[in-house]
Amino acid sequence: MRYWLMKSEPDEVSFDDVLAAPDRTTAWFGVRNYQARNFMRDQMQPGDGVLFYHSSCAAPGVAGIAEVASGPYPDASQFDPSSKYFDAKATREQPRWISVDVRAVEKGRYLPLTEMRGVPELDDMVLLRKGSRLSISPVTPGEWNAVLRLIRQEQ
Image 1 (cartoon, rainbow, N blue to C red):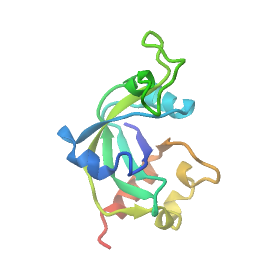
Image 2: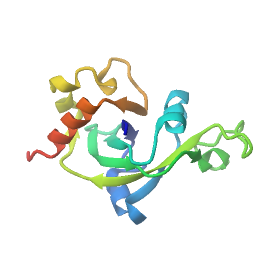
Image 3: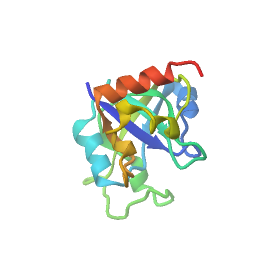
């Protein structure tokens, strides 16, 4: 089992949106970074843990715990000319971009980025590295356990 941090802008898809979705599951679409795509395509497996992270908002942070709920498949938005994620170079025969389904598991308390920066167990977390902008990044078991402990604490 692996662990991941996956960033979503809450205006586009929030953790509450996933909780309200059928089977608490949604497609993770719109990734247009090759390294993040390769994580989904080559390494993610159903059952892997996901820290669902809200980005590009007033208070970025971990909004909930999810799991990878499917294997990789072509991201349909790359084929839709009306989508902001359209890619004219992608074809159905040779898709360039990948989706996986993500299922909400647990909400817990919101864990803001500012609090994460003060947790020694998270010092080496990819998210907290200077210049890190990946929408999907690996999380170590120690980082995973530290975040779980924090989101399960009462404020």
